[in-house]
Amino acid sequence: MSTKPIGIFDSGIGGISIWKEIIALLPNEHTIYLADSKNAPYGQKSKQEIIDLCVKNTELLLKKGCKLIVVACNTATTNAITYLRNAYDISFIGIEPAIKPAALKTITKSIGILATKGTLNSELFTSTSEKFSEDIKIIEQIGEGLVPLIETGKINSIQMQILLKKYLCNLMEYRIDYLVLGCSHYPFLIPQIKKILGNRVTIIDSGEAVAKQTKAILIKNNILNTDSAFGKHLLFSNLEIKIINIFISNIKDCKINFLDF
Ligand code: DGL
Image 1 (cartoon, protein in one colour):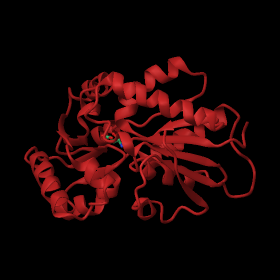
Image 2: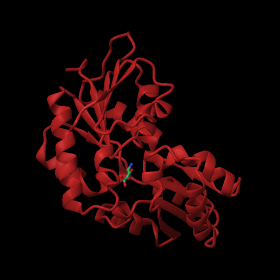
Image 3: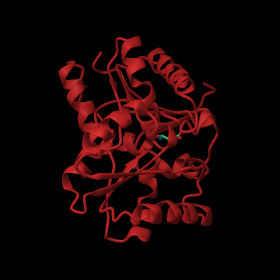
Image 4: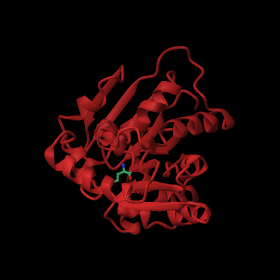
């Protein structure tokens, strides 16, 4: 069991930001990444539609023999992880906006969350947010339109600049000093975000925390791969997007396959 791959999925290429952290922390693990780009963005879909897509992705990863599944998507985690954990015996690791570290460190007592509509409207996000909102202001901003631009490689486009400026300026009106990236696609925008915000705001994402949690669960379940060889990595995409290569550039031993799932 320990030599079986870790399965990871996202609505597209965003979760590659999490995948890279997992590979960096667990270099001996084999991994399989599903990019469900055909169905992106998940952020505008209903809870039931998101659950159905997560079940489809989970079934495929189980068929491919995965020993644990990382839901590398905030929208999928906040809407479907409870369902998945009840429906399957395997362990699931999820990703949620990192409100806690930002809430503990803010000096202005005001933090911004940039995430999808699906994440911000979910019960899981609302209950976490309520725990901290007594002491600090949590300003939510939907990043509408950002995921489709990332999925089509338009990270440095004028459209991206216009949208980011609009969303970040809204948040800056509340004197935020921490910005939580609540979508696994957004870490690919960090250079663009920094250009707009400068050093005034600290950006937080959850990738490293997810990798650490994955390692902890592998150890707890006694399924950590103790082989000394480096792991092999497979990416399945259901859209033939040429730009995947840009995103996986520094993942060694990675094969990209088209699969209509
Ligand atoms: N990467 C997903 C997330 O973390 C993207 C959401 C989408 O597909 O809209 O929320």
